[in-house]
Length: 389
Image (cartoon, rainbow, N blue to C red; front, top):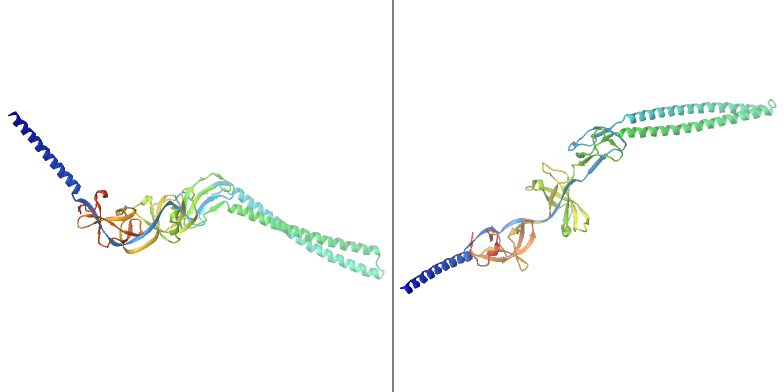
């Protein structure tokens, strides 16, 4: 009786173990061979654009630091930070009371020198008249001397008068030259003082400008070269981007560019390559590419970061697949395809590589279905593994 109970107990335990093993085996078989959910992509004809990416900052091609040419106190400011400005817009005015006095004094000096010149010219006329009379007296005395009607002393005296008259004319002419030089000096002094007075008003030198920063306030004392405000010209905005030197052979001025600002990452703005630097950074092995921006976001700021995507090539209506679907085995590219409900690895040839898509030159046909695991783990998609679309 006891042996029967033991045998029954062993049988029940064995039966349970068999059931557990069957369940485990069935579960393992299901997990190993069950169809794997996949995502599909049909190979289609599309336009593939090859792009080179760089990162840089927005800046203006023309940047100006407005400063004073003379020493003075700021009496008024005509623009503030973020104000749009145009050419010849009055940006700052210095206290010019002393300068006006200097101009008035220089003007008075000029008038005085002109009067001196007029007197010198009058003296020349008088000296010429004296000289003419002296010559007549000398000639007459010399003539009557020959007739015995005048003494030698009278002739010598007439000659002396002639010499004095000639010297007087020379002195008057020299005085006129000196007066002319004084007039020129006074005119230049007046022009200099007028220029200094004009320098008390500081105007915007560019059209379509924008004040990006103001350094000074009314009442501040400035000296030549003191920065008052920064102005940029909005006619031409650039993104100066750093690009890896390996791409230098594919870049050229005029290539179209997509610009993505970090403040508006969902939208691309158009541009073109304006200039390629001829010097590479020895540490980063990158060089600068200046990209001309054709349109800007509604909110932008000088110095903000941006990514540029320079188009170096384009092919239209070519078979293409997303780059994210590519797999590499033994150094060769391939994809997983749907082969009658089962996964199969297919080697392919690649052509032009775009940012998101790549041209397929062989191994796939338009309309053929490429797959990828639904959870992103393609390691489970071995050749012959059943798939569920």
